[in-house]
Structure formats: C-alpha cells, structure tokens
Image 1: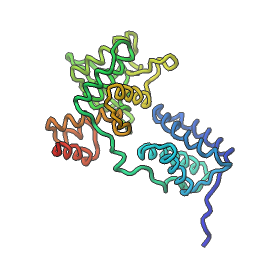
Image 2: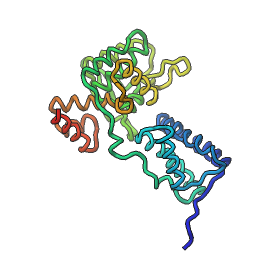
Image 3: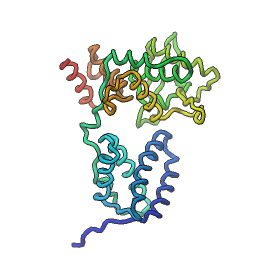
Image 4: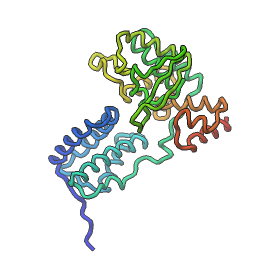
Length: 300
C-alpha cells in the first residue's frame, strides 16, 4: 500500500489562488466576506514564511498552534480562523487544485469554550449606559445600539442588516423587521419598548434626510461616512464603553458585545419566562442553551 503524500502548492501560485478566491468572495454578503477576508489574511501572512505550503492536517495543526500560542487567540477565535482556511481549501478542491481538504481534519476550539461569554449585572448595565456620552451623532448612535441589544436582545448581524425602512410605526408603537444570521429575508419582527424606541428616535434626529434603503446604523467616520457599520465596528465601540465603565474588570474574553444579548436573555429568565418563550423571542434553536440560563438562576 502506497503511503499518502501530501500535496504542496508554491507560495507564488498560492498568492494567485488567494487573489482569485477573494474576488470570488465579492458575491457574498459584505459582513460574511469581511470576516473571511480578515481571518484568511492571517493564514496568508503565516504561509509567507516558507517557499511552499504543504496542504496536510499536520501543517494546519502547526498553524492552529501558532494562533493559540503566538497570537494568543481564544479557542473561539481559532475556530473562526480555521473555518476561513477550510473554506479556502474547499475552493481549491472545487477548482481541482487539491484533491482533498486536509483542513477539515483539524478541529478548532472546544464546544464548551464557544459559549464562555458572560452576561453582566444590571448594575453593570447602568454603568455601561452612563459611560455613553450623548453629545453628537456617534454617541446617540452607540446608545441606540446598546439599548437594542440589551432591551431587545438583538444580535450584531441583525443590527448591521437593518435599514431605515425596516422601522414600522403603528398606533404609536415602533417595530423593526430583522434578518437573522443564516436567513435570506427579514422575517423577524420585534416591537421596541418605550426606552429603546426613544433611543432610536433620538439617533434618527441626526438622520433627517435618510432614505428607507439606507442602513439604520452607519459609520460616522471621515473615510467611512455613509457606509453600513460592520460587526467589527460594533464590537470595538461596545468594548470601548465596557472598558470605560469598568465592566470588563480583567475579563476581556468573557465580557464582550455578545454579553449584552446574553444579559437580555438572562433578564427574561429572571422574570419567569418559559423555555419555549425564550426560544421563540430570541430564535434560539438549542433548548440546552436556554436550560443553562435556568440552571444559573437556580444557583443564585
């Protein structure tokens, strides 16, 4: 029986394939494309250290070790970075350049690590809100984003995909149509509580000439003015306020933007909501995820 010989690709050819792949990504959603491009760039920087790439599980394991030890990324981030390599290798297999995708043999972070984010207390919520200075458009925008995440449990992707025209007013109440992760249409509707509604209306006062097709939350930077906010942009803004409010308290990897959505879920649990009610409101697929919050409530 012949021993398996891993395929190799010269660095020169790999750079060309990478360029072709990035062009192929232009067909994807902007937020998805941005994540793949950004995480794959790290891999391309890593492979530049050698004249050729050995497309084997052993080599990808080396890259994984580099991410964990040298870059000191969390297991969750490593999972995301390896996913972009798998997608790239899938593309190479589809083009007939590789016969197999060796990257699929290398696992990322453990499942337990992927759900290690923590919610924050109501005291922390108040500190976070008070840390946001509402003096200009950016302040009012960030305040509205935080209120939507805490008050309605909206995810980053839902905020990014929302347009001005997705806001609907009926009998004094305001609701918003949302497109969740993995969905192709805006099939989720959430009614905004009064405090959240006021926060959104205050921000929109700066967008007097906004058109229905324009993004609800857009960048206000000099170079990116008018462009839709990105997941990275939202995370950076929220992390800035979490740091400013002293909420992080040395737990950079556990207290993140996702903590705001988790706080909304935890609040509903504490109010006595059932598993089915929580699953329906937050579109949670796995019942186990909700049960974890119920167990935490019993421990308190």
